[in-house]
Length: 228
Image (cartoon, rainbow, N blue to C red; front, side, top):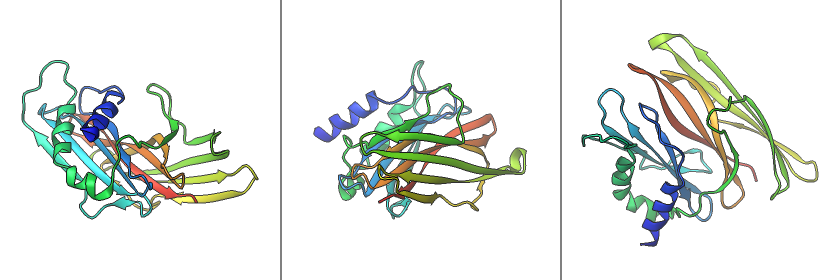
C-alpha cells in the first residue's frame, strides 16, 4: 500500500502530458544508497493512437541499465478524449514489482532537483548554477554533433561537467560517449539535473528529438556520473 501510494503521489506531481507522439517523463525514484535510479516515459503514438510505456532501471555508478534492461509495452485500448496515455505506465509498472524490490527503489526518494528547463524556455548549451545546500557550484556544457539529414540523420553528444566546492576545489568530468552516434536522432537538450540521495552522483535527464513518419518524436534518456 505504501509503495502504491508513493507511486501515485509522484504521478500527480508529474509535468503536463502532451498530445501527439511526445513522451512524458516520470521520475520513479532512487534506491536509498543512490546506486540505482528508475524512470519511465509514456504517451500515445500519433499514427496509431496506441498507448505506450517504457520503464528503465539505471545503475547510477556504472551509467548503464541493469542486466534486466528496459521494459516496454504497447496497448491497443481505445483512446478517449483527454487521456494522456499514463494508464500504459500504470499497467507496465504493475509488472515491475520484482525490479523495484531487487534494486530497492523508493518512489519517495526522487533525488534533489538541481536544474530544470521550464517548458517554453530556450535551452542553453552552457549552464551555471549553485547548490546552496551542499555549497557547490556547477558548470555544464552540452556538446553535440549532427550528421546527415532527413531519414539518414544521426547525432552524438556528451556533457562536460565541472563541480567546485566552497573551498574552490574543482573537479572536471566528461559524461556520456562523445563518439557514439544515435541513428534517427536530430538533437539533444538537458531537461533536468538531479543529485542522488547519497549526494555522490549527478543524473542528467536528456531529451532526444527523433525522426518519425509524422514528424518528430520526443523521448528521454539519462546520463549519470559519480562526483565524489
